[in-house]
Image (tube, rainbow over all chains, first blue to last red; front, side, top):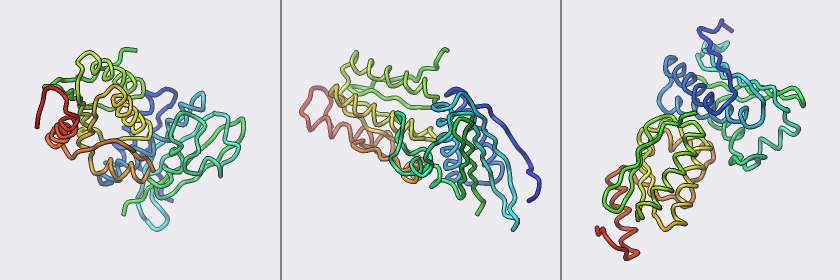
Length: 137
Length: 129
């Protein structure tokens, strides 16, 4: 993989940071050449991920960066890391309609549908890291 | 923290509010409360919630929008959401959010027409189509 052209990191602690994170993500997506609809998908996915951090973790951070695949496709990668409680049953939270909070339970499965790739690493008592990517068509 | 307020305008028996900024959660919740208070004060028969300038509706804002429609409905006020951008409609469906029971219209003009029709049907005072 080629080195990232650009990377931006946004601390996520309060609901104000949710807006900052998605504005940064949308700006990078636009600069990379994503169309309006993909920009909205990326911004919405970031919003959902950042809200999870605000709801469940003391704090976290969102990193958005330009990426290039092995076959030279360009895209955007969003990494959302937190120091929250971790997720006991990942399969369960990936089910539509499951939620432990006042949300709609759309967070993670919905985010996965909006993006091209979705990876989750979580450890109880340590935190959760979600990585999503969208590729330019 | 000081929260920026969204202007709520009155036209005839209706209230019109247009979201023109990226709303963080507290501002969105404040907006909901402001709207319900204004409905009570003005006895508005209808409310237009215009989302033309909104480029992201996540599950939180979608739920809040549905809540506003339901709460205003409980108070006897009909709500029409207008101006959903194509990208917002697409992301809402992909995200899996359903705005059940929420009336929508393409733009403000069609929204007002829809309100007149709905409120008019109830045979209420004031405006007619």
